[in-house]
Image (cartoon, rainbow, N blue to C red; front, side):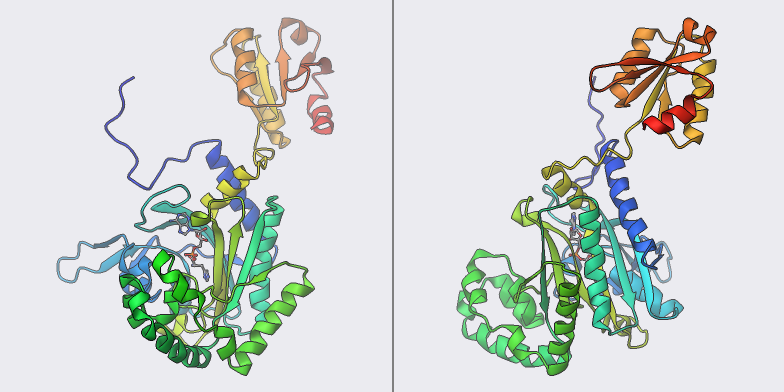
Length: 421
Ligand code: HAM
């Protein structure tokens, strides 16, 4: 077979079954959790005016290097647009536009786009689910967001995860800290990488986020923000931690965690998978962004949220050997060698009962249909040959285990299967 000249673009991939089923399963688990906690869905555009995303921060790589941007076709005033690299900025833009009643608790799911250097777990199009609460400064909202994300990871069975949290304080705390940090970094500027010297000019705090080897010694000795927090910020962070303690959610304080986006204030956190390579082991992250709505032309509104990388979460599930197919795998495969009428009726009847059922088409031989049944991953085959048809029976074969067969009444098949599955 000759290879097609067309491949999916670099950094993107076609996700086929069963991987696509597993991703959908993860998304559904997240959604059911969020719906049960009173969150409503927001479906926002895949692209926005690029200025919306510029608010993520002029010193973040997402904005400076990774935007997929383009102009629309209006010849008079072509608007500069970009594919969304994340959804928090769009949610805040939507809040400023619609002014919903607060607290506004929302969830979202969908693809994001970043022009990254592709590697395992790092794509140019990737899936995120996320949740945001707008319009409350209450630290209980921070705790709720962290506990929901933690609850999601536990619900799907991940064991090897770690929560890192930090507070980068309110504006006043950061102002005090920035002065100290700038002095410290400037004194050591000869030891810093060129990129960090540029970041130092735009947003000194984010120098702490540098992963470059040459910066690490300077970063290790930098003053810690916790010593510069205002009383209000200290109190806020204390309450978040108390909430997590109350819920018995384990976490680690990470005093240098600043995250890769500029809009954060107060609480920041990251979920790390210990079973993934360290370069791509962040499976989720978030924090407070009390100034973002205002920067997008809305009223001063507090916000807190989290986004989870679903592709990476799946990689973490795979490396922990979790069985994600259990709830999507076929339960029954109908093998009918009597012409197909029975397959049509039985598949319809079982599907209506919620039993995951498939069948083959084209009146194939018993051997070919049994092969298809085996390949389908179904637990049981229901076999109808002429003897069964005459006796108003079916044969049930266990396709896993030792291939045991029993005869069942055709009439009560649905009811009897429900007891078995
Ligand atoms: P983020 O840390 O940029 O935060 O992304 C969240 C998660 O998306 C990451 O932890 C990672 O799992 C996944 N992710 C990011 N980039 C890629 C990529 N290129 N390929 C695969 N997965 C990736 C945000 O996006 C913020 N909006 C989070 C937030 C919500 N903050 C407040 N509310």
